[in-house]
Length: 315
Image (cartoon, rainbow, N blue to C red; front, side, top):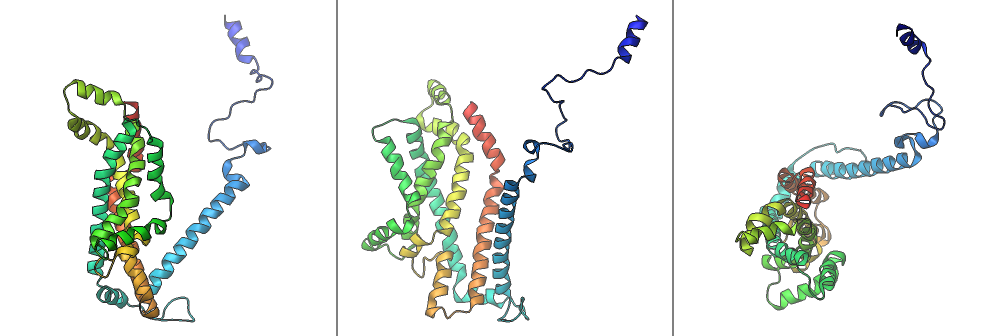
């Protein structure tokens, strides 16, 4: 027995089978002479091209933001990279001259109203499209796509004509109504896949236990749809705050949102306003948008959103 163990220990290691390469631990550095097909993706020309494009885009975006911020804090200058004097008076002056307290209040109020109404109308409509089959269902889906795919100005002018005909022009109500036209279809198209991924057997079991349609919707479907509702609400919120065409056509001095107020300031008196005032308003607009996104993302985690949708689909 001792002789056999000695022979086994002294035997040379087995050579790998012909045609099969020895396995290399994952994450190890490839040996010299590696074939091009085994090179890492980061070393390929296409990867360098993608990274270069992303870097150029980020540099351009950062440059624009920095230029606007610097302009909003500086006095007039021409032959230097940075202004010789810095001041914050442009913010105070633009706030008072354009009544931004009222403008931001209208912007936030319109956005929240559009979000709430879009969810209240869009979620039940999405449930019907996800759970019911009826003649012309595909045509209805196509009609919901039109306000999202078409430029807002194409249907904004007829909408504005209707609003002015009913005496709603230049009012906050008109601004809310015209923004509902693209927002409700957006919620419907966003929520329909969420509802389709929920197993209908859950609703059937609840009905067998005596639950009515309202109880099924509020106690069973609503908790499962919360991630989708929050995601749709965030997108509608950002879309409404940034919507210019529809809001501009029906708004007035007392119903302008911030993006429309910036445009009116740029074009007032033939563009006679100081450039720094417009830059200050642009910085405040961007800050408002970022604040809304931060608050919204505080309650919605994209990773948890995907996980909860997967769990609802598996159930």
